[in-house]
Structure formats: structure tokens, C-alpha cells
Image (tube, rainbow, N blue to C red):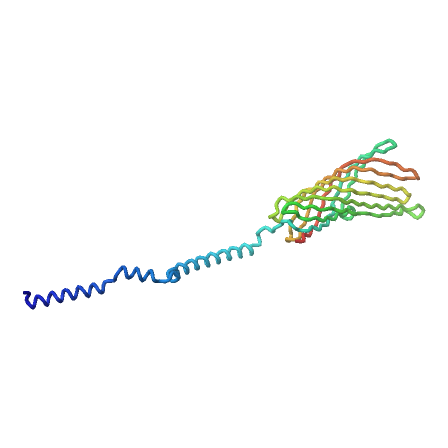
Length: 269
């Protein structure tokens, strides 16, 4: 039989142990409560962190693109893909050397150098950009001059008129479509005619076949406007007729010509 004081001590020990056990957290219960939490709430903080990171990247990309757009030193795009080209070209100086062989016998050599935009024909160009580098199209060359002189009243004056015409296809190839300095080369095949008439009823007419090679650079002042200096080399074949004093002389001709051109092109995109 246990003494009364000992029984009281045992009762207090058991009571305190039971209370401590009730206050200790149950890991199984915590795991159960964690599993009962909706998945949306569990991933809320992770989603917030991801959104913040995405916003930071978007702001950085926008800032980068804005700085690139505002950078005036960046190259202007000079791609000609899908663009319609309209150009005006004039020769600053042109040198021509021809050899002539007359059907009736005899030969002759002629050279000619013409300076200035006013004396040289104007060449019009039209083309279409197949891609960033290639343009196909055509050229039309027109020009003419008329001058007269009177040395004194007792002598008849002289008058001379001349007209030039040529037309044909062309092909351009560009090397740097992403730069505002865009070098290019061209090939042009042209059929043309030339006629001259003088006051003494001397007339001359020519029919010409011209193969022209061109190298130059297009400097894009704007995305749709370029300045086009170029150097051309041409080989020409043809035939002609001279009529003087009622007699006609037929001849064949061949030769070469060089020219420095300056053009202005509009690119309609």
C-alpha cells in the first residue's frame, strides 16, 4: 500500500507529462495541414518572384532598344528589297574613242571629250529590288544640243543640231545592304541612235549597240534617298551613214568610252 504523500507526487508527475504531450506539436498533423493548403497559395510567393524577374528583364530590353533607336551614329539600312527605284544620272565628264571603217574604202580614228552636265546626255533609271542585293530594271538616255554661229554679216552662219537616244535593260548588285555606304556594280545593255545635222545640209546618223559596265557607291542620305557617284566603262559597236553634197557614205564603227557619273535615286518602299 502506497503512502498518501507518495501517491500525490506520482499523480502530479503523470499530470505534467500528459500536459506536455498535449502541447508538443504533432508532425503528422502539420504535414496534413500543409497538404491541405491549396496549390495556388503555395506557389504565390514563387510566382511573385518570377513576375518580378520577368518585369526586370522587360524593362532592361526596352531600355536597350530605346538606346539603340536614339543612337544617331548607327548605320542607316540601305536594303533595296521590294523597293521601286527611280533615278536621274548625269555625266560629269565623258571620253570616247572610235575607229571608223568606210565601206567605200578608208579608215579614220576619232576621239572626243565632253565636260559638264549640260553637254552630256541625261540617263533615267527605273528598277525593282528582287532582294537585299539585286535590282533589275532599265535605262533611258536622252540628250541633244543645238548651236549656231555667225562670224560676220557677209558670210552665212553655221548651225548644228545633235540628238542622242538609248534604251535597254540593267542589272545592279549591291554589296553592303546594312550600311548607308553601299557599293554596287552594274551591267547595262543599250541600243541607241545618234543624229547630227549641219547648216550645209550635211547629215549623219548612227545606230549603236552599247555594253556598259558600272561601279559605284550609293550613299543613303535618307532611307529612301541615295546619292550615287559611279565610274562607267563601255564598249560600242555600230554603223552609220554620212550624207554630204548629195553623196552618201556608209561606215562601221567600234570603240570604247569612259565616264564619271553622278546620280540621285529615290527608293519607294
